[in-house]
Image 1 (cartoon, rainbow, N blue to C red):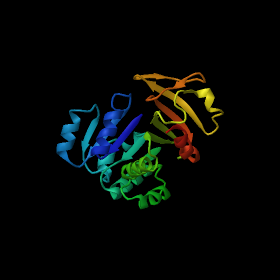
Image 2 (cartoon, rainbow, N blue to C red):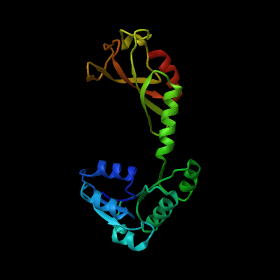
Image 3 (cartoon, rainbow, N blue to C red):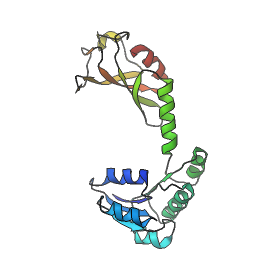
Image 4 (cartoon, helix red, strand yellow):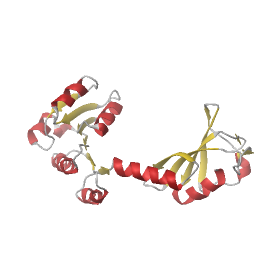
Length: 216
């Protein structure tokens, strides 16, 4: 896939580093020459020192051949403008970063395919951990209809030392993995939920609180 990333800050650099070496053709754009020179030595990608809102810069990046355009600069106005320009060039999928959650709907109404806010994601993540004591980690999947929870079986847990089949029918959740002594296993009905084991659960959003009360 031919991907153009505009903005090589914290988010852009991490994304480029993750995508590098995975059979993608990457082009990175940033206005700061020093950052471009530094990144060019670290990541297997074409790095362009330029303004992603300028036609010349986008054409130098061969925007017409791009499969995806990702704008993650620190300025949401620039992200919006460059993503709209990419749309005009016929790029199939555009992604833009917003800092202010209130702008998310505006971006979406202007047909930006994916609108992301790392700040909002981080805030929601922390809020969920506060509201769900006992949860070690969590991930929201799909459109927020389900969550993957990671938690530890404590001695006072209602499920401690029980076999999974003893928990009855799992209608709104599914235990998908168990970590014991740093070894991961895919559980079945005979698996015992031992004290201090880490378990990973896929749960419907509406059932998360009930699942937490059952396991923690």
